Length: 126
Image 1 (cartoon, rainbow, N blue to C red):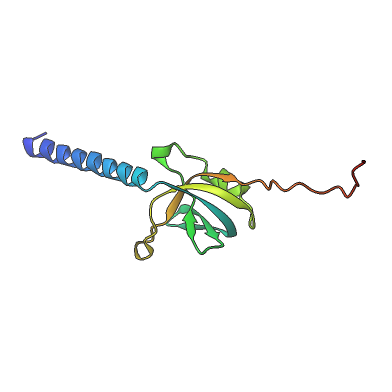
Image 2 (cartoon, one colour):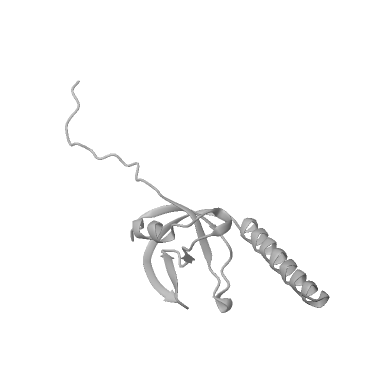
């Protein structure tokens, strides 16, 4: 290997490291938690990559895909448990940029259980 090949490999390695660091900063600097209610769930494929999309009642579209930096590797299992009409607390990273096809991405999602108790219809004894 010549000196130019080694320099080229080092430049390439530096670009990969810097790019990974920028992506890491981007994902961690855009984290937010919000309450959503699911209106529609859609599965599709884009360039042979699975796309799990969540449409909310307030008009947001959120992607559910694996995230290396957050150790999230079970997007398909998470997506299978979601139900239309249910409310969830969702932690996301990223921003929505329509012309680039960027979406917020789910880090964690937890169903909000209804705390309303059912009335039995029985009269209380006095």
